[in-house]
Image (cartoon, rainbow, N blue to C red; front, side, top):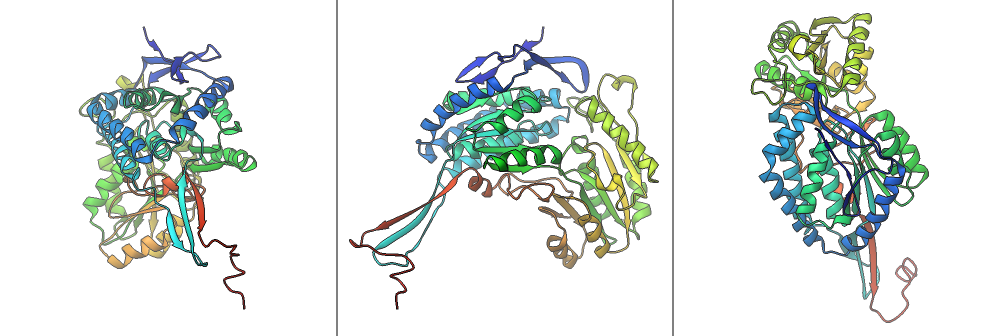
Length: 496
């Protein structure tokens, strides 16, 4: 019999106020029921907020280096349980074990990086314009932070958001994707075991339209961090703007990999296979467009199609699997719709384009798909599909590649393969994305650098690296005047 899980509110594992639950199933085999999880509502969020406010009052007063020590212990526990968590993650999300091990490692890296930032929450001291006066700034926590996370990185993205928020002294309420609730449950168990006070973290399971909406609309949650679709992010942005909340949005991408005629084609082939079909294309940074220089277009395309057809689909826990399933039926239906859209708009289906059936019929599998002859401006080239579909565009020059890359509403990641150092640096400068890789695919961000994009990909904030600590803390300015007299800035200093 499948286990029934609960929310964590006020340090207790409690049933949802609704009494309702939803099933969490293995997308590689939908007969495999992982567990039943709370289908919560606004009442559960309200209870979580009350507890989180108490937790904030206590946790925010703890010295930041001590908060960092808790996160270091979290990292140690993640190291110990890396294999078990990766296996559980593959079971509920589908991507292969090599990737879920990497997902856990990203959480480990983020924990250790956050631990060191406990001694590096820098402010500034600057000269005052007045005599016998001291001027400085410092960081302080904000309050209760609401975190809404997606399915594709079940551990990494929650840690990107949670660990910096906690390190800065905030309390957190997390709503994981209803497609991958189990991994965050395991993470929260580790946080408690590492010594995090129980009322500092709240876990509320449920759906975006109920729990996510309640988090965004609650007046006592001043900070929201969301990763998901651009359409949902726009709705959240309207609410947070009206309520004067701090908001970080990390949303969609339509990322291009450019292969110039002087590129190392063997390296580029490895890169595009990993970038387009890793995580079954379900990454915001996935390589969804391939811009091939006309001089190498035909021979590279043939090699790409041949290689894509050798990729093995299956359960991500099996040793020989290269590509796992899509996350659910609606995702596979969406991919199938885009296959028809591509055909209707005149693109050539070079390989894939259908479900494999047979022994994989109990899962949401879809063959790695390559479309050739894709026109810039077509829906296939412009719209985020979030599946194993790669659109190939022929380009005549680097200048044309820049125009095509920049001609979409998104601006997350890009890459260029070239042996020309001048083109490499032009790409860094001219490609309108938050991230650009040279001689690497569009995926591969590292935990100690900022992550995010421009245009419809985000709202200017960054996950990861040093910048995220600014998002989760406020700047406070202090002045100390020890002159023993009234000094008026801008007036006494420059009085003539």
